Image (cartoon, rainbow, N blue to C red; front, side, top):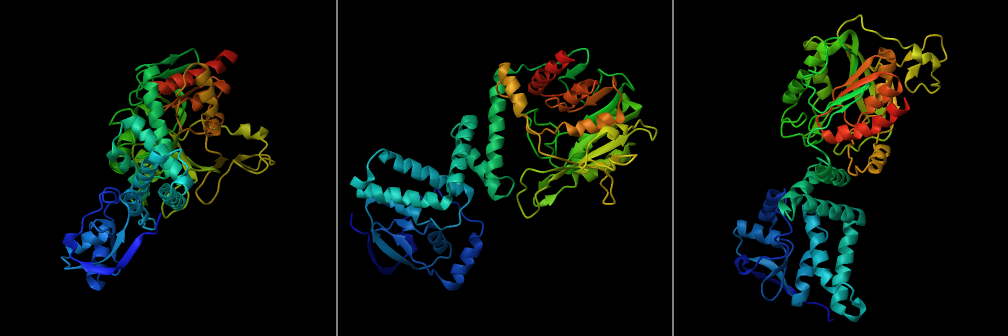
Length: 482
C-alpha cells in the first residue's frame, strides 16, 4: 500500500466541509467547549483540519463546529488522499491523543472491535490494508490500557444483560466515572450485584420468615416491631443502609435513597422509636453508620444522626471507631476513608455493662483493649474522642456463598457486611447468656451468628427475603450443633 498522499495547507469556507459520520457520533461536546471557542476567536484556527478530496472531515469536527459558530469565512485544511476503506480508522486514530471521557473511550473500543471483526482470523501480513487497521487498533488499545478495556467491555456486557442494547443507560453509568461518583471497578461490581439480584428473583419467594426456638428472623420492616413485647430486648446491634450508597431493590422509598441528608436522617431516626419501646431499661443499642460524599463534600451523616437521636431522648454513652485495614477506595480529592462509627446508645444511665471478659483476652498489641496485662483492662479510650478502636479487614460473605451453593441457592450477594468482632464486643459487654439480641437490619445474619455462638437468643428484621434465606443457611447449622 502506498503512503497517504498529503497536500499543502489550503483554506476553504467551513460551509463546504462535511462532518465525519464516524467520529461525530463517538465524541461528545467537551465541557470546556466555551474555552476552546474563545481561544479560537482570539488566535484563530492554528491547527488545520484534515479532509479528503470529497471535503469530508477526517479530523477536526470540533474545530469545524467552532468555525461555524464564530461564522469564520475560511478555515485552514490539509487535503489527504485516503482509500475509502481506511477513512473510518484514520478518523478515529487522529483522535488518539485527545482527552476523552469514559463514554468516548467505550465508543472507540466498540468501533475498533466492530471494524476489525471483519478481518478476524485473516493473516495481516498478506493484506497491507488489514495490517494498517490492526496497527491502528493496537496503538489505540495500548493508549487506553488493557485493564480499562477489559473493565469497559465487562460493564457493557452486564448493562446489555440487564437493560438490553440501551446505549443511553450505558453512557449514563460510564459518565458517573468522569464525575468521580464511582470507579470502573466499583461500577463493574455494582452491575454484578444487580445481575445477581435479577437472577435471585427466580429462586427467592416474595415472603420468607425463619423461626426456631432461639432464632427468629422476620421478613418485614423494623419500623413496627409488633412481634416483640415491651422491655423484652437486652441489646440492639444494627447497621442501617447508608445514605446514597447502595440500592437494595426494596422499592423506590427504601431507606438510603432519599434526596437529601435531612430527609434520610428523619426517616432513619423514626425507625428507632419502636426500638426504644422493646429495649429494656438496662439495655443498650449499638448503631454502625458511615458518611457519604456527594458533589465533592461529606454530608456529616453520623454527626447529624447522633444529634437527632439525642434530641429524641437517647443517651450517647460511647463512640467506637471501627478502622479497616483494606477499605473501599475513595475517589476524588480526599483520603481513602478507612473508618466507620459504632455509636452506643442507652435509655437509662443505669444500663448493664460488664467488661470483665477482657480479663481472659490476649491482646498484646492493644488492638481493641487497653491494659490487658494490668489488673483492670478496658476497651481502648483516648483524648481524640475515640473510646475504642477495632481494626479489622473488610468482611466478606465468601464462605456463606459456598454454603448457599451447596443448598442450591447460587446467587447470594451482600457486600455491606461487618465482621463478627463488631457485634461480638457489644454482646460480651452488655448482655448475659440467655439474653435476647435484636438486629433491626439483619442482612445475612452476622449478629445472629455471633449471638448463637455466645449462647444468646436472637431476633432479626430483614426486608429482603433473599437475605433471610441466606441467614437460615448460616444459622441452622449453628443451631443444630448447639
